[in-house]
Amino acid sequence: MIAIHVNSTAPFFLRHPNEEYLTERFSLYCTVISALEWRKNNGAIFMVTDHIAAEYYRKNGIDEVWDSVLELIPEDCEGIDPEMFWAAGKLIALRDIPENAALVDEDLIIWKKLALSQTAVTCAHREYLSPDIYPDPDLFGVQGFPILERLDKRVLPCNTAFLYLPDDSFRQFYANQSIAFMKAASRNRCSDRLCRMVFAEQRLLAMLCALTDTEVDTLMDMNRLFISQNDYTHLWGAKQAMRDNEEQRKGFLERCRRRIRNDFPEYEHIIGAIDECTKN
Amino acid sequence: MKNNSWYLWLNGKKIFNIRELRENFDTPVIAGYFLGGSLMKWLSDAGEYSLVKRLATVDINEDIGKQLEFAFGVSPDKKYDKEIKLLPENPPLPERKPVTVTASSFGAGTSYFSGTESSFLNAVFSSETESSFISSLSSSYGIYKEIVSELASTSGYNLSSYSSFVSGQALSVASSGMLALTGSSFMNLLVSGGFGLTGSFGSFTLSSYKGFLTGISGSFGSFGKILLGSGIYFGKYGMIGGSIGSFGSLGGSFASFGEFFENGSFVYKAGNTTITAEEYHRTLINLSSCPLNAYGYGINLI
Image (cartoon, rainbow over all chains, first blue to last red; front, side):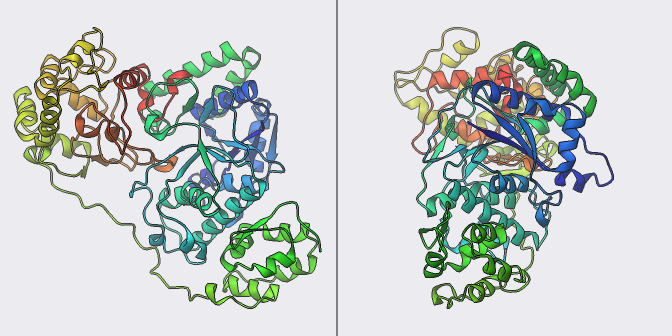
C-alpha cells in the first residue's frame, strides 16, 4: 500500500518570515522513522511537499528515506491562511496525488502491516465532541460554505493522523469541500489556530461520511488510546512537551538514534544529516 | 457526451457526465468543488472545455453559486435559493466562565475551573502542610468521597488491592474485574508517599504533588499542563479531568485522561465503556515507561 507524508512550509514562514527553512530535530527523527517503518511493513511512501521543503530534504540527503519527494503543494497554499489552517497542505495533497494513497502524519509511526478496508474510510480513531475543540461550526461565521446546513453536527470527528480513503471520488469530494471551507474562512482571518483547522480536516470528514453513508473504520479505539499497545506511536502533544522539556527531548532523540542504528543500519548516515540540518 | 472515470457527489447521487450534472444541479456542493479546485478538472476530463473557459471568469468575490448556475445554464432550484445570512465578522468562540477556586470549593463539585498552575496551587495548598492537604481531601472533597462511598458500599470490591498493587504485590481485583479505592486507602497512600508505580511516577506527597503539577517532578512533568497556553482545566476531581482537548497548534483532540479515570476513581466509565483492572494496569505501565505517553501514545515504542 502506498502512503504519503505531507509537509507545507507556509506555517513556518508565517512565524519566521525572513529565515531559512528549518525543522525541529525531534520532529524530523520521527518523520524519518515513520517513513522507514512504513517502507519496511507496508510499501512505498512519498513525501508530498512544496519546493522549499523539497530542496531542504534533497540538499541535506534526507530525501532518500522516501521513495520520492513530490512537489505538489504551492508555497502559498492557494491563498489559504496558514495560521488558521496549518494543515491545509494535507487536503491539497489528498486532492492532487496522482493515485490513491494513505495519508500518514509525520508524527505517526505504524509499527505493523496494515490490512485496510477497501470500502470504508479508515482514520486513526474517533474523537469526542469537546466544545472547546469542536464548537458549533455556525459560530465560525463562514460565508460561502452553504453545505454546512446539511451536515450532521452529532457525528464524532475522525482523527486524521492516519487517513485512507479507498474511493477516489469520495477523496475528491472531501478534499474539495474542505479546501472550499478553508478558502471561505480565510476571508475573515482570526487568531484561531485550532477549532477551524480541526473542523476542516477532522469533523468535516466525519460529517461528509455520514452524509454519503460512507462507513468509517478506525485503527484504534478512542477510549483505549492510553492503554499499552505495540502498533502505533503518535507524538501529538508530546511535541510541545519536548519543546518545553529539554531532558525529555534529549532522551527522545537518543532513542530515535538507537532505533535507526538497530533497525535500519543502512540509514545510520541519516543521523548525522538530521543533526546537521535541524534545530535542537 | 463523455462519462468520467470519477464521479461528483451531487444531490445524493454519483454524477459521471454533464447531463447528469445539469439534471442534479446541487449548487452548494458544486460551489464546493469549484472553490476546492476539482470542478475544472472534472469538466476537462468530461471534455467540456467551453464550460471550463466560462467558469474561468467566475468572480469569487460575488455570489459563486448564482454564477455557476448561470454558467451551467440551469434554473436555480428554489430549494437552494437561500439568502445568505450576514453574521458578525470574526464572532468570538464561546468562552468558558472561570470560577474562583478555594480549598473548600475544591471538593464542592465545581464542574471545572480554569486558571494557571499557581492559582490552582494557591487555592488548594494555601497552608502547605500534609494535614491541610489530607484534610482538604477528607473534609472538603465531597465528590470524591461520594464516589468512593458508593463504590465501597458495593460488595465485591477489594479496597486494599491498590495498596498491594503499589507495594508490588499481585493485583487483587473484584470478581467484576473492576478496581476501586476507599478514601482511607487512598489517603494512606498519599501519607506514605506511595501512589501509582512508586519510583516511576515519583512519590506523591504534598510537595511532590505540587511538583507533579508544576513539572518539577522529573519523571512525569506537568500532567495537568496542557495545550492552550498556561491554562489548566480540571474537572470535578481536580487531578486531571474535564476536557484536555487538543494539543494546541498540534491539532487533534482526545478524551481527557481525567475522563478516563473519572472523578478520581479508578473505575472508568464513559457511556457503556469500562476498562478492566488489567487494562488499567497496562495503562500505568504505559505511562511509567515513557512520561511522554501522557501527551501522545506509543512513544515508548521508539
